[in-house]
Length: 370
View 1 (cartoon, rainbow, N blue to C red):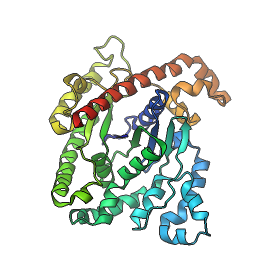
View 2: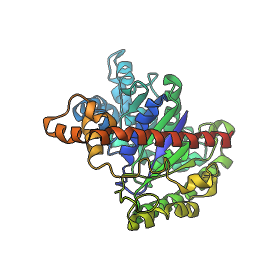
View 3: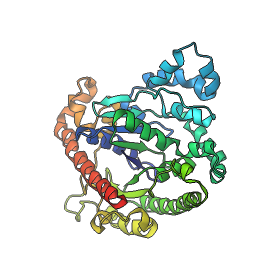
View 4: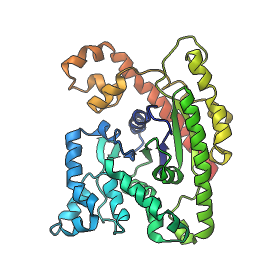
C-alpha cells in the first residue's frame, strides 16, 4: 500500500476535484484505491454521498463524537458492533484514540464509489482530534504510547484498510492549513502532491510548505533518537517524499508557449520548479529525475480549464467523463452537458495519463527506498 496526501497551503487550486478524479482514474486502471477525507470542509465526501445521507451517518455518530466511551456503553448488547461496522466518518474512527479508549474490533465499511474505489467520509468536527494531537505532542518525545498512537493513528488506519480490503493506494484530501493535523498527515504518508495554479500565491504556498516540512522533519528526527525500536515501529520507516506538482484547471491560451498559458500565467508556472528546488529539501525529492522536477505530473494532461464540468461532477456525484451518461440529469442541465459531451468524456484521457505518471513516480519511490 502507498499513501498519498494531496496538499497545498493555498486554497482554491482544485485540490478536492483532483483527489476525487485521481481516485477514480486509479480505480479504472485496475488499482484498488481508498479516498480519505481529512479536510474539515468535507467537500470530497460530497462527491460521493448526498447531504441527507451524510447527515444520517453523522446523526448516528453524534453521541460518540461527544463522548465515545459513554455512547458505546449505552448501546444494547450487540448493537455497537453493528454501528461501528457500518459506513462511518474518519472522525468516528479516530475518536477512540482521541478519548483514550480502545479501538473497536469492527473496522467501518468504506463507502463504495466504484468496484475498485472506496471512501472514508469526512466530518466537520475533526478539529477536536487536531486539538488532541497538539495537547499530546510533547508526550511523544517521552514515549507515551497514547500520544504516539494519536500522532500515527491515521497512517495505522490506512494500513488496516489496505490489509482488510486489499487497497493498493490510499489518497488523502487535506485542508489548506499548515496546522498540526496536516503536519502528522503529510509527515506519515509515503508521498505528497501539490496542485497549483500559475500564480504568485502557489509560489508562496510552496515556500510555506518547504519551510514547514523542514521543521516537521526535525521533530520526527528528534523522536527517532529518543524512542525505542518498538515505539518507532508505529512511524513510517522512510521520510515522506514529494511526488511532484500539477497545474490544474488554468485557462488555455492557444499557441502561447509550451504549456499554452498566457504570458502572465506562464511566467509564474515556469518559476514553480525552481521554487521547489529552493524550498523543498532534496531528501524529500531524491527519487525524482530532473525532468520530473521540471514538468507537472502528467504534463499538460490536466492543465487547462474545465469550465463548469467539475461543478457538474460534484452535483451528480460521478467523475466528469461519466456525467453525460449518468442517467439522472436535470432538464436544465441536459442541453449544456450533451452539447459538450466530447469535452466531458475527454477528461478521462487526461486523468488516466495523470494517474499513470503518478504511478511511475511512486514506483521510483519504492526502488529508491528499497
